[in-house]
Length: 207
Image (tube, rainbow, N blue to C red):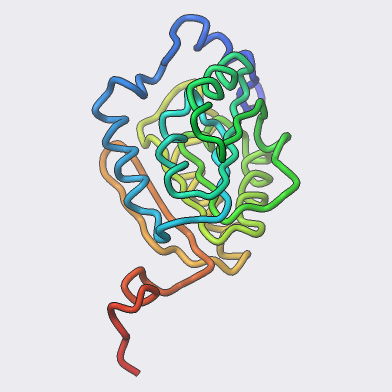
C-alpha cells in the first residue's frame, strides 16, 4: 500500500483548470450557510491581525476582512491567488499571496487564524506542523471542515480537529465553541476562556 501523503499543488491546479469555482463557493447554499456559521462563531468583534490559508477565490476572505484590521490570505494555486487579490483590491488592509501550508507559513503571528477546509489535504506529519503553527501566538483559532469522506483526502474532519485540539490544549487555549451537523464540523479555540457574555460585561458569573 502506498504511503498517504499531503495532496500536491498540482492536484488543486487541475481542479481550477476545469472550473473557476470548483466547490461552488459563490453559488451553493451550503457554502453560504457555512460562511455564516463561521463568522457567527468568532468570539471577538474585531481582530488586529488575521490569517486565512487556502483562501481560494476569496469569498470568505471578504467577510473576514470586515472583522480584521489586517488580513493575510494565501492559496497554493498562483492564478487563483492572483484572481482573489484582484477581486479584493478594494480592501487596502487585505493582502493575498501564493503559499502552501505548512511549508509557507508566515514567520509572524496572528491574533486570528481561520482554517476553513484545509486540514484534511495534509498527511499526519504536515497536519501536526500546521496545528503547531496555527496555535502559536494566536488568540483565536477557528477550524471548519466537511465531515463526509472524500477518497482523495488523506484525513477526515475528525482527525484534523483532534490534532488541532491537541495542539491548542498544549498551547493553553480553551475550546470555546463547537458546532457539528451531518455535513460539517466547526470549532473555536481561544486563549481567553471566558464566554462572550462574560468578556463583554453583560453577565458576571457568581463567585
